[in-house]
Image 1 (spheres, rainbow, N blue to C red):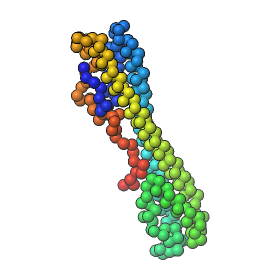
Image 2 (cartoon, helix red, strand yellow):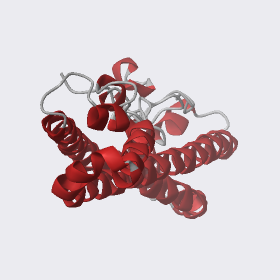
Image 3 (cartoon, one colour):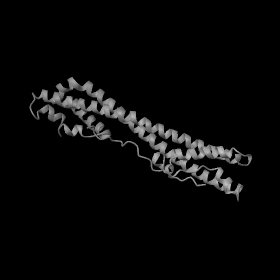
Image 4 (cartoon, one colour):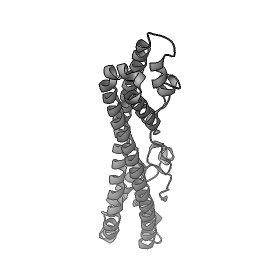
Length: 234
């Protein structure tokens, strides 16, 4: 008979809890312990499921950011190409300089929210610089669409990151309450069967050493969610 440990993965805790509840149901004398323990088990199951689903949802959100970022970069490159055309392909002509005072790379290098801010500043120059009037007429609508889609994707990913963090915090609290309740029941079973170690052990499953850690997910130090700013695609 071994205590539940905070470092155990949530699925291991849930397995222990299912066995423990089934064992407590075997006699009238222990059913009261089952009634008190079941809400803790159910809370951990709900919290673990919510965390897993929140993490899974991040895949679609990350994909949306990467594809919309790529589309925005293509829109930025199109602005640069049209600016060169407006300058009769002269290197560093007035239209290009007005739109890209720090060069094209400075507009393509940022990621995430920094890319949004950079693109918004580029749009402002595109909208206001007289030297870029011809470029604006050709590209503004497409640029606005690409920027809007990317902005929405970034906001959605940020909301997803927040949801993952909140789900992990809820799971962490549920795990702490599980460990406390499980250990409390170990003490209660010992009191019910004070000199019968075999009877005590019947109420608690064995913990495999290969499944005792949180490496499988849901531990106190789970793998962090996707960084808010992805690196640029290769």
